[in-house]
Length: 167
Image (cartoon, rainbow, N blue to C red; front, side):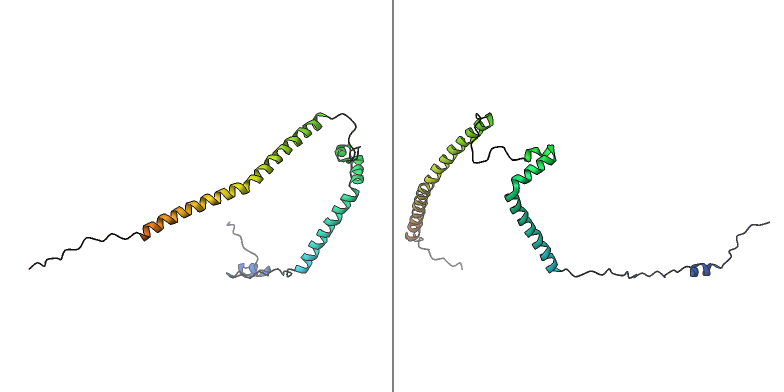
């Protein structure tokens, strides 16, 4: 007894049972529809974001200390945001700390540097004038040398002897 598989349907009917689209070398896929870029919409969103930033900046400047205090109370890790106990305009009655002394030393050093820069800035016009004079003197010397070379008479070449013609 031989065992052979016999299909219940012919092969050409299997392909037609399912909805199969024929393949093509130049398949055209449907292109997604795109909305055109709306510059007015973009500008409006940018303007809203800009105005929101300005409002938040002004609010932070006006209510910054109260906001810092509230944030510091909400989280102990953010206590460094809390405003200092003494107002900025009043000096601290405590003795100056090492940091304050260091800051004073740095500010004195910066004052000396600023004074030295002012001295150098005052000397710049004098140095520029001296350089201008040196350059103009050198240019005049070069022009004089060139004028002397150009105005000097050219030496005459020796008189040429007539050529003898060969017979």
